[in-house]
Length: 235
Image (tube, rainbow, N blue to C red):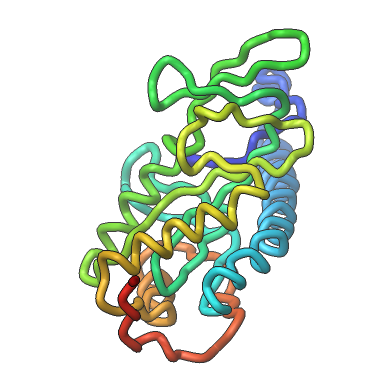
């Protein structure tokens, strides 16, 4: 299972885990999973609260959110699922949004699947790109929603004050302050290539039926379903 959360807690020592046995070991694993799950849910709720007003302004309130989503894209394989902090379902596309708490300057790596994080002392850490981590979920959602001609994109959000994004960081790797402009460009691109807005409620319902554990109940900022009007031509 792919989890976007970057854990800062020290990992349990493998020797200690091996020394546990039977019910004690199972209880230990369940307790650890419970703690990590609670932390992830807090991150998901906090993320939705921060991005909802921005999405609402760009989408004219036509947006639905799903928190703590498990996208099952490869049943029966070692990496069958990908965890997503928040899905934003709009009338111009679906956005896979994950939060990262990296510290330092984030730069492109030697290939598109890696990012470099440079700390204040000049130390360099190579990390898998958040966009690469989200690819299986994005690919699966594109397939599920293909009949709707629905764009699906990944957003990796770095909201920490002490995280600096290099100007050449990949598109989709964003600070919170970048999100509004990013969404505006996606809306404009959609208007230029589509004759109608998408039905966000219908997309959300299909995601609920086809994507494994699709998170907490969808939260619609505005329940109006006036999403079938024709787009005005850009003059």
